[in-house]
Structures are given as structure tokens and as C-alpha cells.
Length: 324
Image (cartoon, rainbow, N blue to C red; front, top):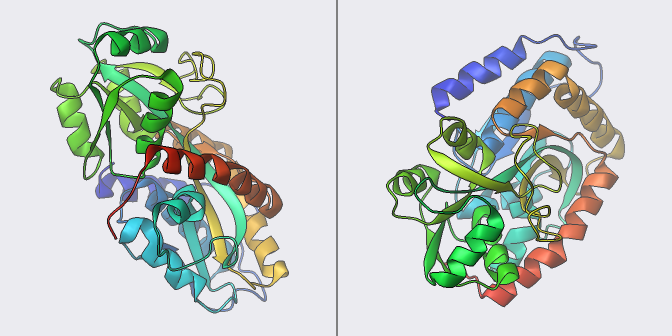
């Protein structure tokens, strides 16, 4: 999604009605900073700008998005971990910073279990397994059979250690097939080579792949969420396709430095739930491949802890390493 269209999307959501959209007393009484570890225009930035616009309207105070890029979000995570825990520094983070990066990086500059309090998972977006239209397969089982007959097929990702990469490695291990990872610097180049027939498959983010599927430019085989995705309800899950437990999604949530007062955490949680529960917002987010959640701090924390061993084992077994 281009930055211009992101701005228009956020502006449209800002105009939606909000319950209790009047300035609040107490917290916050001055500007709030919302940190994002990636460049403008990506999924985390989209959510940050939606939340910041709506929070500013609710709270009557500026909420400023600060994009601190680098090291797969680790630079931003370190900055937030060391921030004063007063509710005025928030972090829009993903499961990458919380449970994947700790297994990828040897010298990670924060402790995701110790340094943060999780407030609410705002949305998740799954990956969608797509193949070029000229690949002679119609479903996942046919792809497995084809891969066994043609060793050395390729799967792409937008970078080493992304959920796209990990989904491909999970597929490789569970299907017992020989497929080669080809990392790219972002999804745009992947799409170009996929359409050009230079790649065999791609576990692409829903936001990037849904338009291609709907336009008939690629063939979708399965989605990596636990349940079918509302954006493509006819598409089976990887679980339904014969791979029990195959779930790989990008979870995006709101967190704060450890030690943030519980009353402030609860207020932010309640207001975040108001934003993502709005029916119009849910519809608009689904259109760009995101499904809203709005869970409690305890539920968000439990979900991340439950996933961590799975990713740690996969990363170790596949020998995935990143340059530091």
C-alpha cells in the first residue's frame, strides 16, 4: 500500500463516530508518543496511525507516531524498553519483536518478557500461500506432490526471519519437501518475480496478496490463519489442507514499558478496543487483509507466550540466522 493511500485510509477512519469522543481528565495531560519499528506504509504503521488519530480525538491530546526503523524493529523495541513507564511512550509491535526476534538474534538489546507490558492485540494478518498461474497445481496436496517430483522449487519471503520465511520453512519441514528459500528486500520485488514465473511459491502477507488473487494474477492455495480468513472465505486453511497446527500470522498489538501503572494500561486497553471494535473500522481493515482482535492484556500475553516455543524450535531446527 502506498503512503498516500495509507494517509487517505487513516483519514477516512478518523471521521468515523466514536463513543465518548470527548477530552478525558487525568491521563493523558500532554502529548503521547507512539513508536513503530518500521517505515511508513507498512502494516504496523497503518495500525499506529489509526490508533493515534482516534486516541488523539478521544483524549484531546496529540498522539505522535515515531518511525524508528532498523534491525527488524529491535532498535524501536530497545528505545521503548528504556523509556519512562508513565504511559506517554507506547509501542505498536508485532510478534516479531515479542517472540521471534529473541530466537533470531544473539545479542538482542531487550528482554521481551521482562521489559514490556502487553496492552492489547489490535489485529492480525495471515499469510496466503500463492503460486504462479502456470504452476500445474490446484491445492496444497498437489503442490506437495509436485515439489516431491521436482526438487529445488523456490519459495520467497520479504526477508530472513519474517513470518513469510518461517511459514515457508514450516511447510518445508511438515511436508518433507526440498524447497529453497529466496529472501528479498521487501514484498514488491517478490511479486514482480512471482508474476514473471521466476519463483515457485510465496507465503505472502494478505495485504499484498489479496489484490493479486482477486485480479487473477496468481493462484491462492491456502491461508495460514487458524480459521478461514474473511477476506477470502472460500480459501481453505493450511490446517484444513492436511497440516495440523500450521498457523503463521503477523500479530500487531499495543504495548508499553514494563512498570506502566495498571490503571493507565487498562484505560489504553479499553480505548484501543473501542477503536478496533467499530464495525466500519473492522470492515475497512478486512479489506486490506487485517482481522481485528482487541483482546485483554492477559489474553495477549498468554497468546504470545504460547507461540514462543514453536518459533524458537523452528528457527533452531531450520538453522535460520540473521546478520547482526
